[in-house]
Image (cartoon, rainbow, N blue to C red; front, top):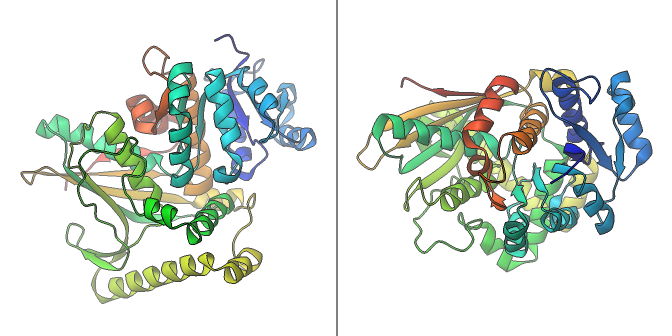
Amino acid sequence: MNTKFDVVVFGATSFVGKILCAYLMREFGTATKPGARKLSWTVAGRSRSKLQELLTALGPDAAEIPCIIADAADDAALKQMCRQTRVVVSTVGPYALYGEPLIRACVETGTDYCDLTGEPQWIRRMIRAHADQAAASGARIVHCCGFDSIPSDLGVWFLQQQALTHFGEPCSAVKMRVKAMRGAPSGGTVASMVNIVREAATDPALRKELSNPYSLVIPAPSTTVRQANVSTASFDKDFRAWVAPFVMAAINTRVVHRSNAVSGLVYGAKFRYDEAMLMGKGFAGRIRATSFAAGLGGFLLATAIAPTRWLLEKTVLPAPGAGPSRAAQEKGFFDFRFVGRTDDGRELRIKVTGDRDPGYGSTGKMLGEAAACLAHDVSKADLAGGFWTPSTAMGAKLVDRLTHHAGLTFTLLDD
């Protein structure tokens, strides 16, 4: 494909879009003033004035970056944008409201795509509607390339690579536990969550789909195993601590199961996976876990009811496009711990860490490296068109980029 750019950032003036563009500017520079690494990129959105404001904020060198004007609902403009690039990276959410026209444009033009969605119901709809055409056109579609779900998906992938090296077989059961995390909730992520709850409140079929850990495995698997789901405070013997629900588990677990399915069940036909947050030991840990689980349940109930949802959106929840200061982002971090076990009881542990606010600073870096990886490291000959996950599309190549450039670590633990 003869294109002008490697990557186009669609939704560049969103909060995460600005962070992503700042990262690309710092890492890759511009066409005439390149950085240490090569990548030709540009920005796209519906407002030329806002795009120009963004480029001004990026510094004088950004003045040469061209702007592509395209609205999320303008099919012709989206296809024209896609024809100019190898990869489109989208930050325009909630994706269930605004995302399908761009997916359609990418699969029609054979353009690769990645995003930071955490909306399983929308991903399922996109796979069912567009997978065949993506396979035919060669478009590689990779959802969930931010905090949800790169640390989980690549964390499990890394653990299983270690298991194959040490045990000669994958672990049949894996747990992820959030040991520590600091970061403000993303306004866009909260908006997506609220939209999911709003849809599910009036759609019994969607509620059933959202309770299915294999919902992104399409076609449905012929055999399944019962998956653990940490929905209340409970004691985890493997970590000797109390745990509470992790809100991102709803998307992360489904992405991990899809990775297993599309890779030919390399983790096993009876693979089990779950996620939760570590709340501490003893009575204090139990109280924290119980309080957190109750608070999360109350929040989800409130967002399911129209009047209280409106009140939360007006007075409490961060608005889409809002977010923490740069200083707050730089103070953020996350630390995930994974334990895997084989059928005969052999155990292996790893950790995955990030050095920035999960939903903003780290997500911007992960998304940028995923887009660059798709553009430069994964040829069309090596990966066919279709709907992939971060680990099945990019695997070791993305882990290498993330550890060398994006502040993530993937570490095998001694105990």
